[in-house]
Image 1 (cartoon, rainbow, N blue to C red):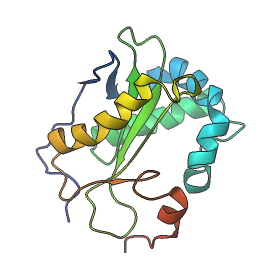
Image 2: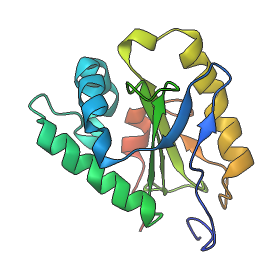
Image 3: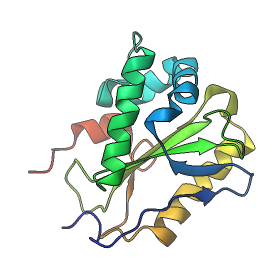
Image 4: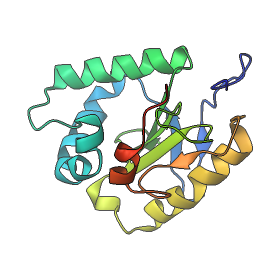
Amino acid sequence: MAWLPEDFAHPLRADLPTGQHLRPIRADDVGIDFPAVMGSRERLWAVYGEAWGWPPATMTVEQDRDDLARHEREIEAHESFNYALLPEDEGELLGCVYVDPPEKVGDVGAEVSWWVVDDLVGTDVQRALDAFVPRWLADQWPLPAPPRFVGRDLSWAEWIALPDRG
């Protein structure tokens, strides 16, 4: 099963009804990414730590920049996608959306997860993002099967327990 059609052009911007937008993350976003990630690190580790080993407690700005550069290369190659959630002025990072090819068995077209910074948990922005991402994927992404929303359709522990694709 193909991950995405060869001629797929990934979205460069997606606007949320609450005024924020998504755009592909870049290495030069480190100045807004690092404080957002480390400021929400405990909660993010509780979500992603066991599965991805991220974000480590000792992560440096340089390590974050390297990680963002890797994401930027993967986006360009259409290997996986990391979208930054940003206010209109892009002065701070508010969260991220990950759209990845399936790593685990199952008839799914992608494995998708997202987060917001601690200050936005339980807010209209988080609720808007929660409603937006599934619609956006259905409307704009030519996935070969419906996506799996990790941490939502199934827990991270259930996802980790699934066999890897062969």
